[in-house]
Amino acid sequence: MYELKNDETTEKKERRVPPALAAAMSSREREEQPSGEKRIDRAADFREKMARATKRRRRNRILDILLVVFLLTFLVSGFFLVRYFIQSKQNKELLGNLKEMIDTRPSTDSGSTEQGQMDKNDPGYQTSDAEVPEYVTENGQQILRMYRALYQKNNDFMGWLSIEGTNVDLPVMYAPNYEQKYLRKNFEGEYALAGTPFISEECDPKKPSANLIIYGHNMKDGSMFSDILKYKDEDFYRQHKYVQFDTIYRKGTYEVIAAFPGQVLERGEEGFRYYYFFDAEDAEAFDTYIREVKARCNYSIPETAVFGDELITLSTCEDSGASEGKRYVLVAKRVKTE
Image (tube, rainbow, N blue to C red; front, side):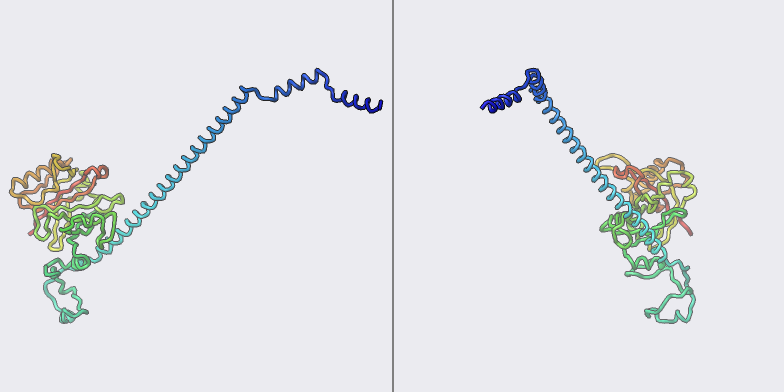
C-alpha cells in the first residue's frame, strides 16, 4: 500500500510543470496562434497573389491570341505573296506565248509555188512566204493576217499595244457588252490579278472615234501599264515618244502629246473627266480637250493635235491613292503616213 501511494504521488510530481516553464510555453503558443490582424493580412496576401496569378493568366492568354493572329496574318500574307509571284510568272509566260502567235511574215501580193497550186480548202494547205496576204477574212470581216491566230483564239482580242524599250507589249481586249470583263482576267479568260488591257465600251475600234481609251493595271512587278508612270519624267518622254497600237483592222503609230495625273470624280463633283471624251462634236470641243490635257502635263510637249486627228488615251492607277480614284494618263495622236 505504501509503495502504491508513493508511485502515484511520484507520477503526479512528474506531471507537474514548473510555473516558469508553463509561462514560457504559454507565451510561445500565443505567438504561434495568429492574431485577428495577422489572419486578415494573410488573407489579403492570398487574395493579392491570386489576383496577380489571374492577371498573368489573362496576359498570357492575350499574348497567345496575338501570337496566333500574327501567325495567321503571316501565313495568309505569305500565301498571297507567293500566289502573286506565281501568277506574275505565269502571266509573263502567257504573254510571251501570245506574242509568238503574231505572224510577222512580210505580206506579198504575187508569187506562185507548187504548194500555192494546191486547193486552199485542203486541211494540209499552208500559205507560202511568196503569197502571204496582209488581210484575211474571219467571221465575215477583213482583219490583219498577222493577228489572225490570236483572234481565232479569243474573239475579244482587238489589237496589240507596245512602247519600245518598256514592258508595255500587250494584247488589248474589247468586250463592249461587258467593259470590265478583263479587269481581272487574262487573255484566256482565267482569273488573273493583273488582268488584260481593255478598250472602253464607249469606243468602236472598227470605226475609230476621235479617241480610243485603253485601261490597264499598274502592277508592282512592273508589268502591264506600270511603265506609263515613267512619263512623269521628261527625259523618259523624250526617249519614248511613240506608241504602237495595231487593231485587228489596221496598224497604227501614235506620237505622245500629253502625260498627266488624272482623277476619277464622284457624281456631282466638278473637274476634268478625261475618261468621258470619246468623240468631238466640232473643232472647238476637240481643241478644248487638247488644251485641258496639255495644261495638266508637268513639262512642255511641243507636239499637239488638231480636229480630225485620231487619239488614243492610256489610263492606269497611280502608285498610291488608286482607291481614291487617282490615275495617270498618256495621250497620243495617230501619225498619218502616206
